[in-house]
Length: 229
Ligand SMILES: [Zn+2]
Image (cartoon, rainbow, N blue to C red; front, side, top):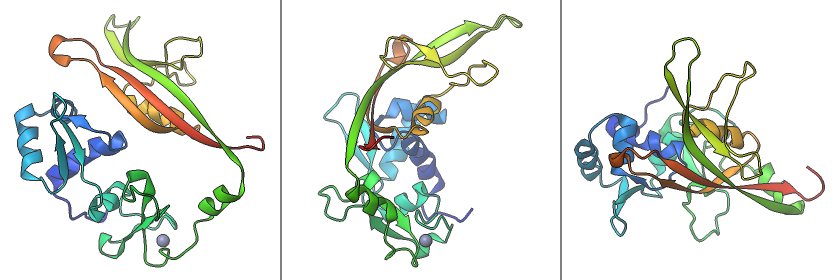
C-alpha cells in the first residue's frame, strides 16, 4: 500500500467518514467507532483542524471533513486512479471533476482521483448518461438493532435488520446458509449499493447515554435507463 501524507490518527477518523460517505458525525459516534473516549476524539479533531469542520449550530456538535483537500480524496480512493484503476503514488495523482460546472464542485461524489494519463481521458459513463433518457428512483430504508438467542450457546446475538417499507417489515441480511450477516450498518448499505442504490442522506437517531439503541433512516437514489433496466 502506497503511503498517504495524512497522519495516521487522522486516517483513523477519515475511515469512519468514508464508511458513511462523508456525512456529519458526532464526537460520540467517532469515539465509539474507534473505541476511544470522547475527549481523545475532541482533541484529535481540534489538533487537526485543517482537515475538519465543526458544526456546533447543532447540539451535540457534528464534525465533517473539509472538502477540497486533494490528499483526502486520494486517501478515500486508496491512491487508485478511478479511471484505469492503477494504484500510484499520491504525488502523481490529480483531482478530476465529474461535472466541473457543478456549484459544489468538491462534493465527494463529484471528485475522482486520476493519474496523469487519465486526466484528459473521456469518461465513457458520463457520455452515456447524457445520451440515454433516465429516470431517478428513490427509496427510504429504516435500520435498527435486533437480537436473537443462539440455540447452541444460549447467548444473545446482536445484528442489524432493515425495513424497505414495502410491507415486508424488518428482516436481517442472510447468507445462503440462512446465517445473519448484517452486523454493521455498512453491511446493509453495501447490500443496496450492489443494486446501484446510492446513499443521498442518512439520519441517525438514538442516545447511547440512555442505552436506547440507534435507529437509522437512510435515503437512497438510483439512476435507471428509461428503456428497460
Ligand atoms: Zn489512470
